Amino acid sequence: MDRTPQMEWLSTSLYAHRGLHDLAKGVPENSRAAFDAAAEAGYGIELDTRLSADGEPVVFHDRTLDALTDNTGPVAALTAEELGRCHLLETAETIPRLQDALQVVAGRAPVLIEIKSHIQSIGLLEQAVRDVIDAYDGPCAILSFNPYSVRWFCKFAAHIPRGRTIIGLISTSGGMPIWRRLLLRSSAAMVRCDPHFYAYDLPALRRGRNRVPVIAWTVRSSHEQGIAQRRANSFIFENMKP
Image (cartoon, rainbow, N blue to C red; front, side, top):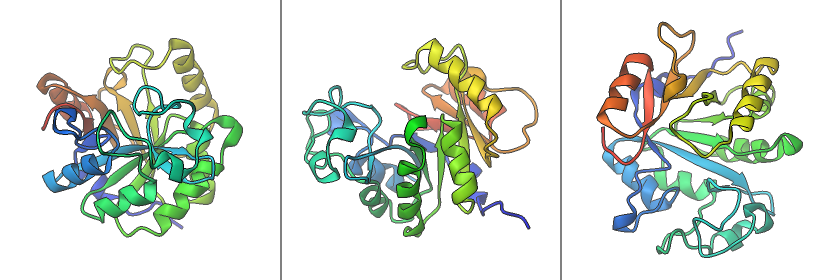
């Protein structure tokens, strides 16, 4: 029996990284306004999820609140309601729950949901995200750097399209130390998670045919867009409109 979910939409959209954000216009990353702007412009959306203290998936990239909000400390230390009162980058926007973000999109655009989970707690965020997706009527997929997270979806939510995020040892994206990249690459080789697609950062893109669809990230210039168009089926972009 073929367990591959329907995902023809995956390669037909270009994805706004953390939404179509523009801080000069009061639209921060991973905000309701950024997701609405992306959907209105005809783009897909990539967003990040973490687990709140009361077990709800919220949309936020960093492990801590310090750099992006008017609060401090770990995201996981606050409830979803408390996080919902944290303002993003001195704007009126606050941290949304995943459910809130998808309600804003309302099926107008495909959504790629990045799972930010740890090996020690695999299953908690994943199950919470699965429950939200199952209640949502619109195209979406999950993806993660963590192969154990992708494997969880393979075993317990095979109906949801799943992707494996790959970062090269040399990356233009920054933000991840070399030791963590080495760890992710070695664990990916050992853990079978049967992804339906891959998300490669630009330096890690391979030439030639791919067995499954490939999404490139993160495109920030016309030059990088050209590379992504030649080597991938689609791409995630930021600070530009392709």
